[in-house]
Image (tube, rainbow, N blue to C red; front, top):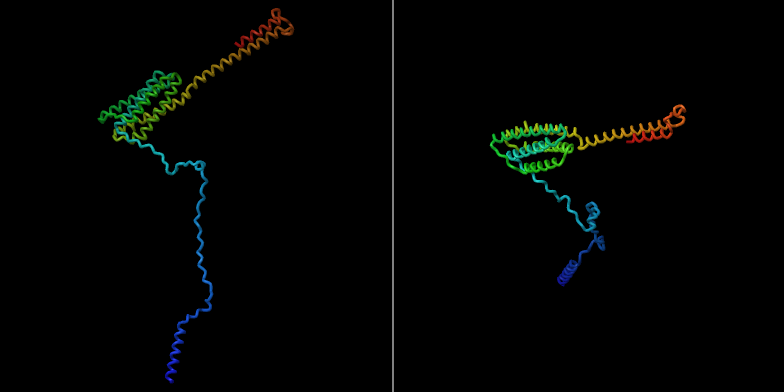
Amino acid sequence: MVVSRNVLVLAFGLALGAGCSNQPAASDPSTVNAPPPPAPTPAPTTPPETAPAPPPSADAQAGTTQPDATTSTTPSAPAEAPLTDEQIVAVLDAANKKEIDEAQLAQTKAKNKDVKAYARVIVQHHNDAKAKQAKLVKKLGIAAAESDKSKQLATDTQQAVEQLKALQGADFDQQFVQIMVKDHQTTLDLIDRRILQDAKNADLKALLEKDLRPTIEKHLKDAEALAQKLGPAGATGAMGAGAQGAASGGQHAAGAQSGHQAGQTGVTAGSPGGQGGVQPPAATPAAGAGAGMKGASAGTK
């Protein structure tokens, strides 16, 4: 009986323990009904600053677009090919011929004696240069070869000669001297900037540096001095005409003054009170007035 009671108590205790283990665990009263923690707020980010857009241009408003200046490029002129020694010889021949043809025309058409003398020197010096160059070319055994530069000089020569043929007197002298200044400056620049750099033969370079270039530079300085001496075309003639007109006008003025004085004298002589109140027998008022009119007329002629 006692054993049965103990078994019953033990069974009841096990049942009670099992029921207690199935109950949910008690929660922390501090956390019951507590609101969930707030979500973390992200830090504000500052958008990158951008430059304000420029206002639209008139072309953009009109619906047209302009080409991008940064992408458009102007094609540069192609570099000129170096001249060969044969081409340099042809260029020098053409330059000498230009000076000679123009100066020979000036020897026959120029009126100023200084212009004639300068033209004579040009013909002589450039003929000498041609002879020296021909001697060197024969020694080197090379032949002249045409190029665009030598052809252009030939065309310029023809145009300059035709222009000079149409001029006369002081206009011819002035234009010829201006052409000489331009020709020698052009040839000097061509020698300094191209020919001396392109020439390969040492003897040809020596001829250019020691002979041809100093002569051309001297011709240029002489032409510039002569152009300054001549002055603008037609200035001498205008000054001469002005001086003649002034002299003629002075003569007319002097004659008019003399006639006026003669008229005054005649009127005075014809007046009753003239010459102390004594009237000359041949002088009447009408005669005195006539003499005055004749004197005035003679002065205006």
